[in-house]
Image 1 (cartoon, rainbow, N blue to C red):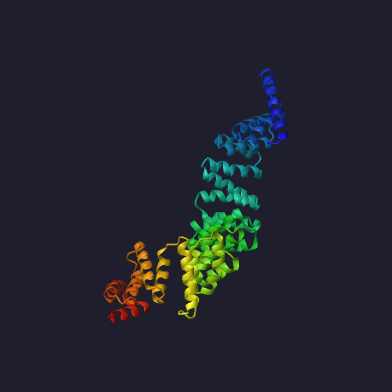
Image 2: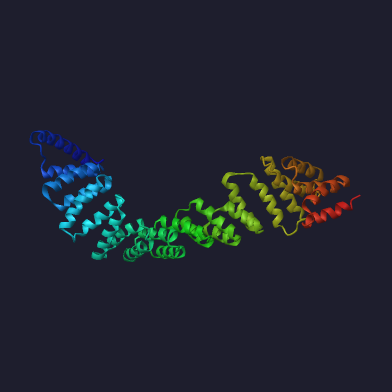
Length: 417
């Protein structure tokens, strides 16, 4: 509260205290004193008290301004509604062409649940006025009675005059839930957002409608706009979800590259598309972020995958170096253990060490057929044919012979003696 308002408050309190003493003697306050009292009650939202004060002022002076303030306070406080209607109707009978009365009677009747009378007053108001504010007010009784087409027609005229967002959102609710015009509602919102600066309410409403229509492209478009506004990660995740639903990995990659964001997601997408060079180039910045040694293991994987010559000894040595650094720094994820162990076995760098690493991976996932295949291949490399056969048969029984590598291993192990 500012100093001016503090001073005003104490002056007002003093004034009322003095007035109360005088009222005991004279039993009456002046018009100016009552006005100040009513406005103070109004400011502090004591609407029932302000209604009483302005009612006194109207009874004393007959000035319509006090009557209308009394009615407004009655609406805000939701008290003495029927009495207020009676008092306002008396004025209406004497001044039948006063539009302000119609504007007050409609919400008073609706508050009293006298919808039929509210609709009658709405019709009278529409006969005398085509102002946007009056058409919007007059639409309310028709909404109460379920005459949605009539209400929508009035609100449409209001929107044509004003381009008011709140009016449009009311229209959209009616069109979506009551008049079966959801597609038209979407078109209106899309046109509105292209031609106006809009609040997030418009975007959230569009999202809701696009979900109902299962329109993924629409969702994607709106989430991109929302993300562009404040870079909130929740919108980024929704965008990636939409691309995933569309199975459009290329689109997701283009979006992430353009916005220079979501490096972790982008890395996984690069791997899925086998864009190993691009993925490899991201690793250094990802590792620098938190020094997570997992990225060293990833570097080993990608270095091997992107190499044209899979038997390049220099490359294999570098791959092994990355895995050893990662493991020394605490990486024990079975996925990396299997990859590292299989590399040692398949490239015959150190088969015994490779088997031991695969066995550690199997402690985490004992029934993983990829790891069992690696172990069987290790036994084959050591010429332990029976153990290799028994292990590989488990893999074939579980996975079948659909993968090229399983077929190659199975054929060779069957020939092992």
